[in-house]
Image 1 (tube, rainbow, N blue to C red):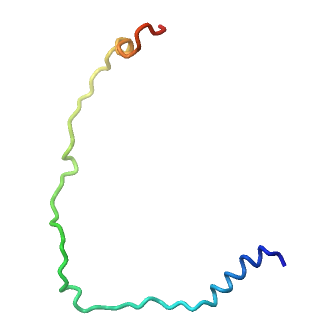
Image 2: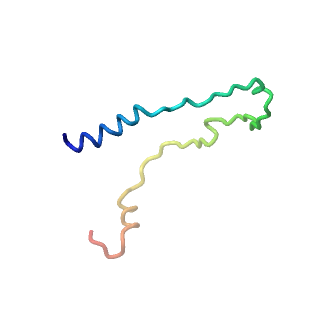
Length: 75
């Protein structure tokens, strides 16, 4: 028998024989009476941070490129 088969089969067999108990569920009748701190709900508009921006024509790119390039760069 191959050792790899035993490595897989023995733990599977052992876990099938293990006795596990389900967790105990405790129901309480006074759940509605328990005080819970809840923050008040406040309205926040989904467009609160909106800023209107109108489309504009592009600036001349060559002047911007020359302004950002290092002095004496290759042209």
